[in-house]
Amino acid sequence: ARTSPLLARSKDASDAELLAKRLGLRDPGRAALLRRRLGSLSALLRAPARCLHAEPGLGEAGVARLFAAVAVMEREAFAALTETPLLSSSREVRRYLRLKLAHLPREVFAVLFLDNRHRQIRFEILFQGTVDRASVHPREVLRRALELNAAAVIFAHNHPSGIAEPSASDLALTRNLSDLLGRIDVRVLDHLVVGRGSEVSFAERGCLGS
Image (cartoon, rainbow, N blue to C red; front, side, top):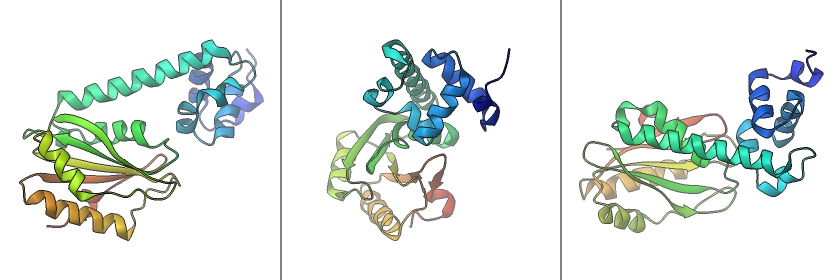
């Protein structure tokens, strides 16, 4: 079979082929073009239904198949987090948070609440903000940790700009929250900033404070 010129120029032909099958497109090059137009694979997977319905040839069935595939990925990633302690599965934590946060157009602050064996109790987005900031209220984080009887937490927030580098205010907030939660014996294991295709771990950088 003849290879589409668009597919030949694609950086990742396998992604284009899989997307084409998932969307019901005969030409993988059209999937590659759609991915580039939306900016990234993550943006394509999380595009609003109205945007995808506007693409010629996709149809309702193709869009429904794509949404079903994303739901399956989220459930599989969530299952991986519930089966093992999160400290021994940092790769799965990053993958799960990437699926949940990387595509969002506005900044949000989320928390993974964990039990005393560092297994997940619940994942919650506690605060939603604008395109470049989300106001976080420490008292609400404290209240929710107490309600869920959490022994530890992992914080996460996204940068809609796509750049995962934390700001000075991110660092100050994390240290403030670590100090506050430490007073009730809730450990802050990490804070991850999620960009497009990358994450920054405060724990790995030694930025959690005492």
